[in-house]
Amino acid sequence: MGRGLRRIAAVWLASSCVLATAACSGGDDDSAAGTGAATSSSAASAGSASSSADGGTYLALGDSVPFGYRGGQSASAYADPTGFVGYPQLAAQELGLDVVNASCPGETTASFLDATAQSNGCENSSEGGPGYRTGYPLHVDYDAVDQSQLDFAVRTLKNTDDVALVTLMVGANDAFICQATTSDGCLSEIVTIASSVQTNITTVLTALRDQGGYDGKVVVVSYYALDYSDATGTAAIQLLDAGIAGAAKAGGATVASGFDAFEAPAQASGGDAIAAGLVLPNDVHPSATGQQLLADAVVAAAGG
Image 1 (cartoon, rainbow, N blue to C red):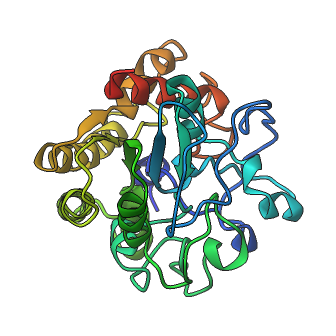
Image 2 (spheres, rainbow, N blue to C red):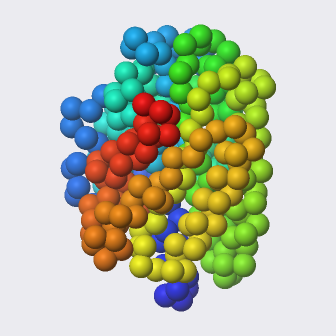
C-alpha cells in the first residue's frame, strides 16, 4: 500500500481491535477509561430497562467509539466492560440520564441491522473468526447471540417508557472492511460506501421511530480525522460524514459533529489529533479528552 493510501486508511476509525487478533494497540495511555467516570448499565437487557436518574434513560448505539474501547489491555480487563468508558457515559452524567450503552466494537451498518451480516469484529471478524460479542461482555446483555443491535434498540424503546435520548455512531467499520478488501484501498469505492452507510443508517433511524415507537431526541455522531493537515484523508472522512448527516436529516435526527469537535484542538498541534491528546497513541480510538469532546458535542446537540 502506498503512503497516500496508508494515510486514508489511518483515518477510518473504530475498527474492532478484538484482543484475540491484536487488530490495534492502544498504547500506554491510562486516561482512556476515565477514572471515576460514570459506569454503564451492564445489567440492562432488551426485555426491560429502568432509569435510576431523574432525567430518564439514554440509549447509546454504535461501534467501538461509543463503547469506549481502548487497546493494550490485559486479557482480564476485557471481562469487565465498566473499564471501558465512552462519550455516552460522560454525556449521561452531564445530562442526568441513566445510560444503556448497547454499542459493540467492530459493528458495521450492515451487522447493526442483521447480526449475520459481515461486521469488523463485533459479531464476526473480516478474517472469518469470532467477534467481540463471542468472547467478551458488552455493556448490556443481548437476548441472544443472533440478536442484532437494531432489534435490541427497538425492544428497549418499546419496553422503556422514559427514554429521553438516543445516540448512534456507526459507519466507519464499513470503510475499514472496504479498505482491507479492495485493491486500491477503497479509493474508488468510498463514494459507494458512503451511500450504503447513508441508506443503512436511514433504515435504522426509521425503525427506531416506526418499530420502536420513539418520538424523542435522536443524535447521530459523525467521525473525526486523525490528521487535519492531510487533505486526502480529511476528504475521505468528510465524505463518510456527509452520508451520515444525510441519513440524520432524512431520519429526523440531529448531528453531533466529531469532525468539528476535534478540528480546532488538533489544528493547535499541527493538525495531529494524536499529538493533541485527543486520540490514543498508535490507535484510532479517542482518549479520555477526546471522549469528553464527543460528549460535549452530544450534550450540545441534545440541547442539554
